[in-house]
Each structure stands twice: as C-alpha cells, then as structure tokens.
Image 1 (cartoon, rainbow, N blue to C red):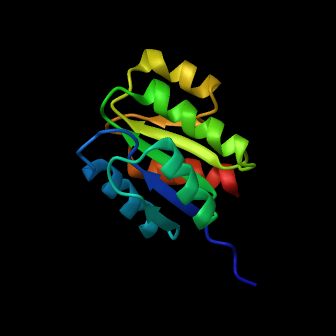
Image 2 (cartoon, rainbow, N blue to C red; image 1 turned 90 degrees about the vertical axis):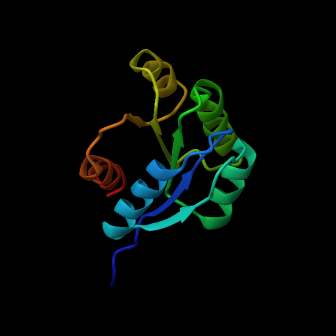
Length: 131
C-alpha cells in the first residue's frame, strides 16, 4: 500500500504583491514529493481557509512581506479551528521580526521560517510533524 502524500496549501494573505518566495517554497515541497496547491496573491483569511478545506490539506503555509502577519496568520488559525480543521498544521514565512514569532506561535502558528531558511529545513520540518 502506498504512503499518503502530504498535501500543502501555499498562500499569500493580505495585499502583498510579490510571490517569488512562495513559488520557490511550493516547488521545493513538490520536489520533495508533496502535493502542493498555490492560492495566488492577495488572499483573505476566509479564502485561504475555504481552499484548505476544499483541497483537504494537511498543511497551510503562508508567506507574507507586508507586516500584517500578526493579524492575518492568527485569523487563519482561528478560522480553521472554527471550521473543524484545527488539526491542520499552519506554518508561516517571510519578513517577520523575531520579536513577533512568540505571539504567532502562541496563536497557533506551529513554525515561522525567515529569509534564508534552507528549503531542506522547511521540507524536513513538515515531514517530521506529519509522519
């Protein structure tokens, strides 16, 4: 019997107009054997959660550069919980000050990956959490 592939939703919440990093992460996850759905730019928390539910993902990975992570990331976590999908692993990345990371983790974001994080570290983190 084949092992279930990890399904990941890569999302760009808020008004960010740059998605190169999100696309690099999405490709690295695909190369590692995961199924990846990319939502595109300027997604609301509601749109992200709706896509996560529709696609039955194991992980929601959000990338943000705008500074709105303190509002948008916890909103996604809360909406997932409200919809009965609190078991979905939520991770984030982008330009996020180190001082903001503890509050994000307290809000339910499992891990935050900053600029320069090796792609292999992101892949391994997700695999370790879900296997």
